[in-house]
Image 1 (cartoon, helix red, strand yellow):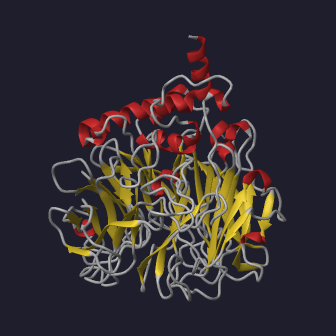
Image 2 (cartoon, helix red, strand yellow; image 1 turned 90 degrees about the vertical axis):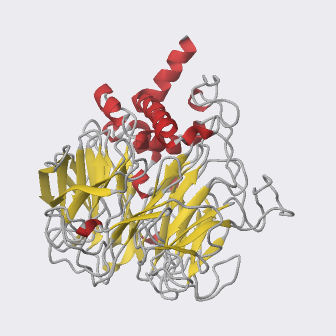
Image 3 (cartoon, rainbow, N blue to C red; image 1 turned 120 degrees about the vertical axis):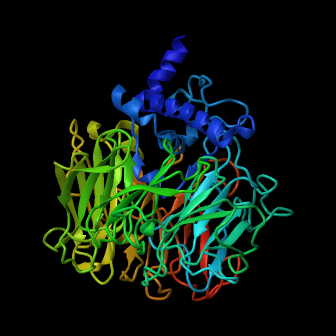
Length: 611
């Protein structure tokens, strides 16, 4: 009994909420979606939204209970705590062995320097700027699965018989010097695969996708957006739900061509016939956010309208618009984020942040606050969605302009949008330099910002150059958790190449593997393979303390810079602990296993050493 009490105390309130969310997830997946078709299988979908709703330790019982309704609570906890999870025969809730880290039995992952892969996505476009691939891990408590783990990339090219707009790969854990598919830990490779397999590839619908894909809880369905073209009435955005079949399509340039039907459901959601919900438009910035508990999606469009759509994955009828509200007519809305704790959707129109409560048949505006000047150099200064810390009641926004057009900024607000803390992170972005999402150190999740611990990292601009990137870091005040307005790292330029080229950062990614807390940063020039840094850097957070700190590892020839990152496993298997992203320009040189010349590529790099 004492051991079990110690375990519960060690897990903390966030972990108890995560366990409750796990039980809900198991029930939802097994009863509604059939996820538990194999005994002991518990899959985890990771997509753009996984890093936009946060759950930390230190939740009050009330907040923990509300958080438990969101399966992302479990997903967030499992990904952040994967190094603690048992693998193999022992189940998640088995009591840990005393004397191991945090009271848990754990073997740290091996860090081998290995060669990863690049898979062509086509010559005209790849994974879109600032968007993230979606990764599905079939069994979080087991070893990585070569056939059932997969990663999905959307492609910004119009679909045709010779070009996919969505593709998935499996046999991910492969490379030229080591491989774990299908035989674990072959080093050197003899009979194993040296690159992934195309799981499926589709020319789906009629438009390319410039946004991130989202996954059902069981990984059997994918929701993505056909972005639409400037002729918005004739070619508007479509809300698509794809049910793929393994083996359909053999490459990005040899896809299966399909339209609406048994495998693809398309909804012209901006011209649905619902009163006040628009007559057709495009969608530039708003990926769908799935409320798994209610099988509903929240999404914006370029008409400034926020939509609720259901069902998405589990219903027997096709998706339909439930209701909508005009946020700012004609504005390009960001991706929204729904917070179960406050029952609010947060969304930006590119300049201000808005909050809406969600009723059974309508949205109600609860608050709004201006963030950036409406005359900023880059048009809309806020491109990506807010990040919501559901546990501590904070919302974070990153903008390439403040209200005076002088600085790029990172902003923390409470969920009532009544209290702001703003940190300057360089000059106002210029020359197409957008400011994308930052990320938080592991200490932020382990103790919560109200303990005064944790760091928010953000990529801003340099103090004398609004078109060149620099890395910033903000701390938090003890007790209140308020973000300090003066960065303690005030512009580290070592994220850039030695020539200090102009360029932009990817959204940042922090990941703790049980031994090392790492920060990943991509830098380059969108659509240009020769003028930017074309660089990914891997930073050890414990050593990232000043403007002169340097990265632990770098990876070059990531043409045009990188899309957003997705992360997969903490694993002892070769090639099974990786990051995934896409390049943002056609390669100027190279051949397989590197990205072939003239191609945009899907890329996998190991978390350690970026090899």
